[in-house]
Amino acid sequence: GQQVQQSPPASLVLQEGENAELQCTYSTTLNSMQWFYQRPGGRLVSLLYSPSWAEQRGGRLTSSAASNESRSSLHISSSQITDSGTYLCAMEPGGYKVVFGSGTRLLVSP
Amino acid sequence: EAAVTQSPRNKVAVTGGKVTLSCNQTNNHNNMYWYRQDTGHGLRLIHYSYGAGSTEKGDIPDGYKASRPSQENFSLILELATPSQTSVYFCASGHGGAISYEQYFGPGTRLTVL
View (cartoon, rainbow over the protein chains, first blue to last red):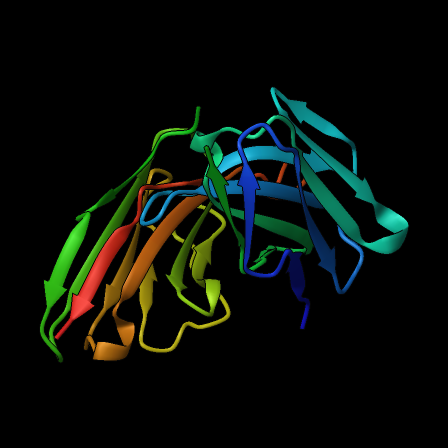
């Protein structure tokens, strides 16, 4: 079935102020993608939604995509301690379904 | 911002008991979804709905039923709860179809089956 691989695969540790890049690769071409943020035990908060591989920006966040490589990236600039949490990507390959990655846990330290 | 609420937020049930998880959205979205989230498995789709009166099986529907009595409400029903159904359950809504697959999530329900 369709799969989503996130990298770094498990966790990423940064110092405050550093930039982060998270990536998702997909096993198939897709119509849209969405990035979420989740605190432990919390709800998934939509960060960016991108139909048709368009680049999206929101504050310190930018999502970009390489459709020919079935890959998308989430760039976090000037990371802050409050950015710590889990970041998940989701893809919509067509039809009813949205397929999620397993998430990357980001820890930003002072 | 999308408004999706879930109740209860926490539930402890006994094996063999019936559990109903409720979800309400005020965005007039056509599509609603039920997921469970477990360490090592990520988010998995249980049931979804295209609109009032419709329910469809997702990837892991066994042991679960769903009900969509109205545009706003979508319930997940565990007729005979088992310990393997201990998890965090999330409801989501979205326009779906030709409009957008962007999804909006509720706060989650933590279910423990003893």
